[in-house]
Image (cartoon, rainbow over all chains, first blue to last red; front, side):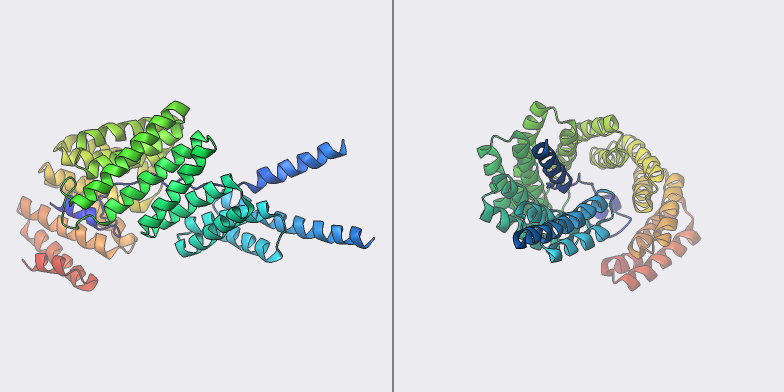
Length: 46
Length: 358
């Protein structure tokens, strides 16, 4: 039936396709790095 | 004095690169990936001798391109990050670069290479005693095998009726998701549990285990509600509706799709609103409630026209033609059948055109 046929057409608003949860990308935080650098400098000064 | 000057110049250069990169990070955090990319690329042009900063910039640039769906650029930068972290002997950095590279290769359909990256991520996480990393590597493995299975699904086949190669890949995906669930349950990581239940549910669905699919999506729904994550909630309702269709529980499917529609409207996402209307139209057709089916197919038609989605429009016309035929509204049925034929010709949909001519 049409419901099942529509599983194969990802380009259209007519898709009754299942939907995945997103990928989890790993992050390398510059803010954390900056804060750590700043803390180290402050500790070096005290 | 000369040394001091060099230090000042060096400091300024470092500050400039890091400042630009920090701004890039801020922009990406608020979802402005294009602007983020500009800042990161300028940061690279300015340059830095701090290899940890450079690694983070490569990594974030790769992620920004990933979010912008420019996967070849994402691949390029995650690859630079992996090479750099290998050179510096940064094991944690290598694990993260491998993970991101694996996710990118998966999207590009390069599954064998993606598996190698997932394995490297898993090996390093184990070596470092990093349970969170291990769990994430298992989730990525599941995603790679799921995508591999889905990519070789026969276009005409239905869930549960795929070739052996597809079933093998999907079973592997389920095994990795189940192994991941054991770890994230132990870690008490509810957000990770939610993601895995969602994808595991879709894997069971493709394997034809619709009862297990429903159980997984119900868990996904529960966790989405705990976090107030309405997008995930909408996805769970949509996936639950799909599984219920295959279980022959059409009333229950309609109930889930109605909730998905309500959430799509709250989220102001027209494309998913159209999908929910289309699903509801089809479900009411299965329930032989053609008046309601027409109502939802018309709603779908209007949104498809707004979105300039000719394929969606064609499908809506086809469905409307069928529903009107069932009600004996022959003039209306003919009108929509002609409209469907016109769109099928325009979009080069040969099977649609042949069906319309019948």
